[in-house]
Image (cartoon, rainbow, N blue to C red; front, side):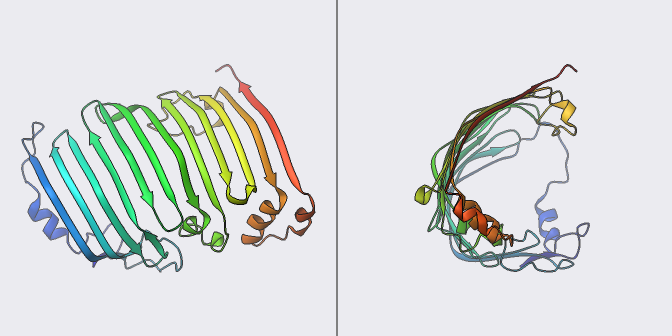
Length: 274
């Protein structure tokens, strides 16, 4: 049971962390660690920030209770500037939010000039999410990012672990995405979202150019985004789907049920001189 009494207070296990830390500071660290196989079975783990009240029936980062934690990890190398890790299997149940993860697997690499997470896959009883992420970096700053997801399935009942109003909404969303970014540019090459029961079908593309470095701080003002273009290539949605979403959040939208289907395509853009 890991806990702390406040944001500025040490963890109750801080003495153990300190005992494992080197007191020497050096830019040229010779630290290196390899673990050929680490297997954990049926373990429980909890973290509680004791000065915060528990928010029930949702994931609460101040109160995390993990049960039935099992994993198989291979740490190929960890040193001062390199990390190579393979998560062969990870499963657990977070009891506060009732989120049950059947399996997480991925291969991760972090080097001096690049980082990537390959073949990330998360599976629950209702969801199956696959993502690949690659990045370029200079020192501690990221300079480029690419994210792709192919045929991922995300259940509303799993989203409900973080947004409890969606609990009981019997929908699964199927997602394809291809998004790339560098320091001053975002390119959404593809975003496709479909739902079970044909209640939603969405296809979008878009681009955005920023004045500020998007990896250091998000633009604080609209004027810092001089050029953007958003193409809603296709939107086909059942009005009853909107009704069900609004009803889940406590809004009376009964008249929407009589609207039938909504179909829309549009293009929006803006260009400014800064």
